[in-house]
Image (tube, rainbow, N blue to C red; front, side, top):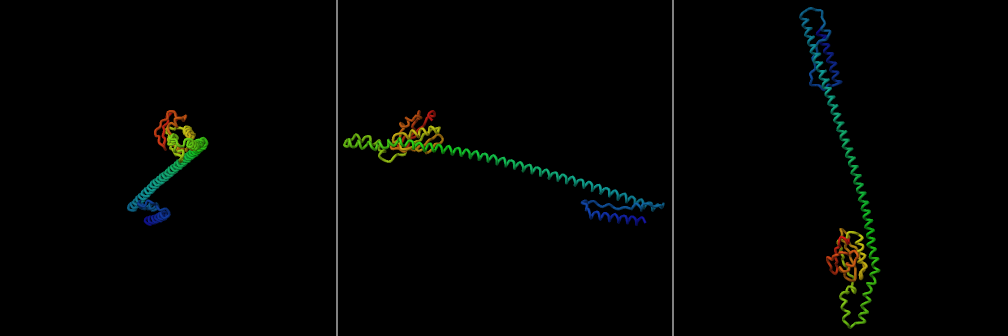
Length: 279
C-alpha cells in the first residue's frame, strides 16, 4: 500500500515537473534533479512491526533528502536568476551610459563644427570686406594716377612745339656758320622719337609723395607723360615719355627731394634714393 502511494506520488510529481519544464525551460540544466521520496500518506501506519517502522523511517529519510535537494535547486535557481538580473541591469546601464556618452560626444562635435563654420564664415566675410575696401582704394589711386598725365599734357605741349620752331630760325639766319651746330647734339631726341625713361625712387613711404613726384616729372620741360608702373614696399617705378633725357639735377628742384641721392643715371634709367625725412 505504501509502495503504491509512493509510486503514484512520484509519477504525479514527475508529470508536473515535465509540464512545467516544457512551459518554462530552465537554464540550469547542469543541476541534477532531486530524487522523489515517499508521500505523506504512506508514512502513516498503526502497526508496531519493527520492520515496517524501519521501512517507514527509510521512506521519511528519502522524503527529507528529496525536500532538501529540491530546496537547494530552488535556492540555486533564485541565486542564478538574481545574478542574471544583476548582469542584465549592468549591461543595460552600461549600454545606456555608452549611448549617453556617444550622444554627448556627437553634440560636442556638432557644436564645434558649427562654431568652426561660423568662425570661417566671419573670416571670409572680413576678408571679402577688406578686399572690397582695398579694391576701392586701388581704383581711387588708379584714377588719381591716370588723371595726372592728362593734367600735365597741356603744360608740356608748348615745350614739345618750341624746339621744332626754334631750329628753322637759327638755320635761316646763320646757315653757313658752325656755332648753331653745337647745341644740336644735346637736343637730338627732340627731332626723333620720344624717349622712354624708367625712373626708380626708393624710400617713398606714402602715396602723396609718389603723386607729388609723378606730378613734378610731368611738368618738366620736354616731358610728354608720366605713367606709374609699380608702387610697393617703398619703391616707386615710373615710366617717363620725354623728348629729352632726365638727370639728378631735374629732381633736385622737386620740393620733396631734400636729401635726394642719385644711385644710377643713364639715358634710359634714373634711380634715386629719398631720405626718410623727405619721404
